[in-house]
Amino acid sequence: MKEFLDAFKHLEKLCNEIYGEQHGVTLYINEMEHKYGIGSRSIPDWDRDLKYLKFVRHVRNNLVHETYYEYDYSAADIKFMKDFYKRIMNQEDPLSLLRRQSKGVRKTKKPPVTGRVKKRHNDAPKRVNPVFSVLIIIFIIAAFGFLLWLNL
Image 1 (cartoon, rainbow, N blue to C red):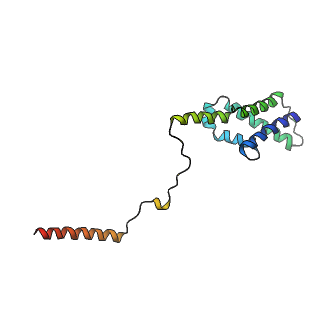
Image 2: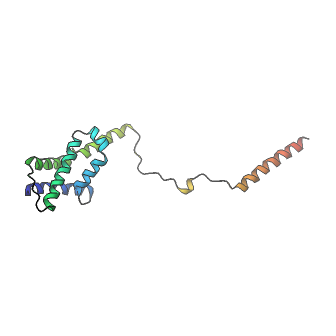
Image 3: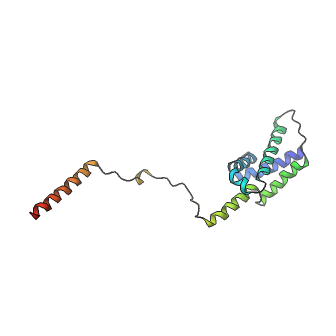
């Protein structure tokens, strides 16, 4: 049990550092789920990695929080966590691969917008005062009438 928990702690610590928060493995899982649509179609073994991460997190939580939880985890589970740690370090994990792939696509397209452009209130078209509009119309009619009067 100690070897399993140590492998998970090691992976959790790395993910905590990546996200700058606690529960890094959960944050990694959440990000994979958020990007599932594109990741599962374009990154090999996305589904397998996501399911395995959920599985080892579940086993770890039960080992730590449940009094009578007995799971006969395997050496393969420990190996997965150690290998996944190495893949993150080498930027060969699913999210790193997806980021790298996205950067490659962006090079051929327009550069990404860095921030959301908000339309400020003063950017809205100015409305003309209706009284001013009526005065302009009266002025145009008077000018036209004056021109007609001159020609007579």
